Length: 102
Image (cartoon, rainbow, N blue to C red):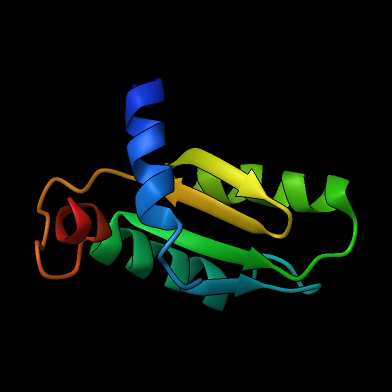
C-alpha cells in the first residue's frame, strides 16, 4: 500500500535528522550493499541512503532498484540522498526511526 501524503510528510521530518546508514557508490548494488539494505530496513524501517553516483539518471534508477529489492516505499529524494521506508511486522521500538521520533 503506497504511503499517504500525511505519512510522507511525517517521515520527511523524521528523515531530516537521520544520518545515511547506507552508501551506494559507482560499483552499484553489490551483495554487501543489498545485505546492509535488508538489515537497515529490518532494524530501522525508515532509512536514509547516500548515492555517490554522478549521473542523475543512474541515481534514480538505483533508487528504484533499491526500493524494488528492499520492498520499500520511496519517501523523498534530495540530490544524492534518498529516504525510503518499509513497515516491519516485528518492530523493535528501540531501533525503529519511526517509533523513536514519533
